[in-house]
Length: 200
Image (cartoon, rainbow, N blue to C red):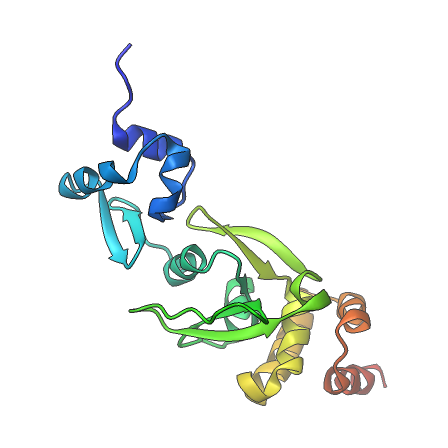
């Protein structure tokens, strides 16, 4: 039986469209084999320490996948999470990521990031596992995302939270019960007031 080629090993490792050299060992490869894959046009370098399969078809979440690969412990949040969940009309100019309070802020060439800090319950409550172009990632749930827009209103602007709330409820992406459960853990007076007005 013919041994698998480096490309076959790499594809069989279950990596997403993007990968880092540190992930090669899990595929049964060494970093020394990466230059040959580059020369053969099987993979391409898209940034410092970041590679992708040359034939991977980019999707609308290309930038999000790239960001999650480079910042693996991050959480996709706020305006980027709204866009992924198809809530509202916000089109973020950067990928919004949350990182732990003590983590060093990432700087990625060729990719704009907006970084916020989550700690305690904010780093786990209402956070879901997902993938972007095969890249493992985490994202705030629709209800958590809307609550966060109110909590971080000074960052996302005054229009985004109310638009997200109206659109999320109108399109049944969230329920008031789901929002209330998030508010029990991550309070927002402004959203409390908005929900009170709706219940009158």
